[in-house]
Length: 227
Image 1: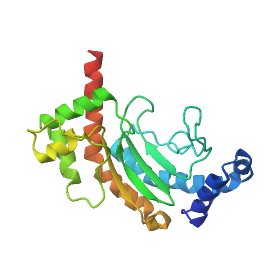
Image 2: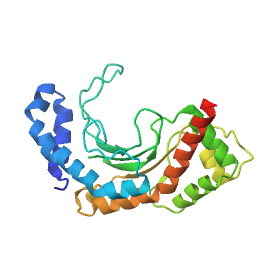
Image 3: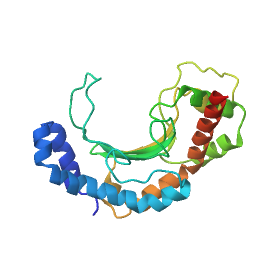
Image 4: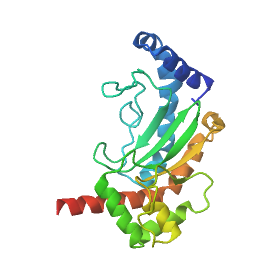
C-alpha cells in the first residue's frame, strides 16, 4: 500500500499527544499507515540496494532498516517521547562507523542521501587525504554530483579554509567538518506516488560512486588504525 495522508496524520497526532498510552491505543494505525508502506518501500527498492552493495542489510524491522518512532530521552534536554519523522537506512553493519544510505520523510519534506550522521575522525582524515591526492575514486564521486538538482555536500564547514592552495572544487570537500551527500525536497507529492520506489532507486543509484568513496575511506582508515 502507498503512503497516504493518514501516514502524516498519524505522525502529527503522535507528536502532539506525546503519550505512551495514546501510542499503544493507536498502535494498529501506526502499523497500517506507517510501518506497512515503509516495509513495502524497502521491499521494492531492495534489488537496487543489493546491486549497489550485496552486503547491505535489507531488513524491514523497526530498529534495523526502519527508524524507531520513540526517542531515547535519557541523555537529552528534549524530553518529547515520539518523533514526527520516519527514516529508513541501509548499511553493512550498524555501530561500526560505516557509511549509510538513508531516506527520511515528514510533513516538512523529504531528505535522502549517503554518508554519516557523524563520521569517525580517522575516516574524515583519510577522505581528506584522498581528495588532496586527487584519488580517482574521489574524482568519480565528485563528477557524479555535477549538475544534480538536489544532491550536494551537506553539513557545517570551517569558517576559514584550511587548504587555501587547493582548487575551489577540492576545497568544497576539504573544508567540510563532516561528510554527507544529501538531497532535500519540501514538495512531498512523490511520497504518495506509485513512482516513489523507482524515483528513490534512481536517486540511490546516483550515489553509488559517493558510497564507494566513503566505503574506501572507511576501509583505508581502519586498515591504517590496525597497523
